[in-house]
Image (tube, rainbow over the protein chains, first blue to last red):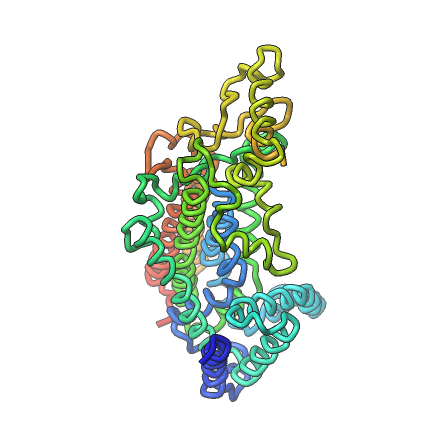
Length: 422
Length: 85
């Protein structure tokens, strides 16, 4: 049996499971259709919420962007989980207490206004683009194993499967289908993570592995440039109040998470108000299972790639470009349209050095810039933290308050030295 | 429920929410971002405690917070006789 048939069978089985559940749980009344007869156990509702809410961004992209940017993108981890605290404390129990089926119902009754209710319905149309986005995410998550299926065909398949189980099963069908989806996705995500962690650090739990040393004695969290505070970011991002951007970004993600309509309606399905509170907690348990693993996957990938490219340490000679692992070259050649490959590395100073070292006379330029920078008359020379030898692998810099992003003349030294030369 | 006990119930509710939200903000915006330099002296697996809070600590604290809130709120509901039994 070839790989395509095998993939087709696995993907087909998962679709059959989703539709089978919808047929088994098909809705027979209004209450069943909109609120699953208010009979969903809070733990199952939490699991369904987790599956409903975690989309391609969490399953596919987040570990990548965290591997790439490091500490600064902790905002995603804190923001997308912190929203559940707001939801549990301020929203879910009150909406459930009101006892209606939909948010527009709640708004219409609460403000004694049919107009407010219509406005709330119109506001939901704004989410149509979100719907398209999620269909695409659904396709990416569930059809990833079938690259032969084009993205537009994939979208139609995704829309058709979701339509069948949503219309047939209503909220009850959706709930149990999502419980099944959560189980499928979390297993697919954590099993590789556990084995990567075991192999790299000897620790069974990726959450512990993140902070445990690998064979060379470097903990994954200490992968060069990773846990440091915004290495090489231009000064404009760090003023006027350092990290105000991180705080505001995190808060925006939190408030956004708490206001998502497809998450809010999940809390109408539990039997009691107290269940709505507990259910938000269970949702976060199931989300945290993925959200504490993702940074470990990201950090370990980064450590692995840096160990591969810099066999003699980040200060030593990197691997020659021609000797890089075959998968890197393959990726550069065959990456899907729209996914950026080599040029993406430009924003990652550590990886960028690999690309430019020894080619186009880059090393000479690097050294010239560094020497210029050490000249007494050079703007910024001698400022605290502004060492000409600033490197991402510089241990003394690591983890300090904006320690590894020394700045002169409004531009980062790290960027000048390594990122800006390509 | 009389007006007096209704306002006492609401006050207890608001107090609990305030405590939880202060902790919520402290671990994420505080320890994870703004106060990270203060925690930089405490090493955790190759980096510092602030980093751990940003990556894992805040999420674990959120979890504890929600279940703590749910349990306390159930207790307050029972005390004021507004639970759904």
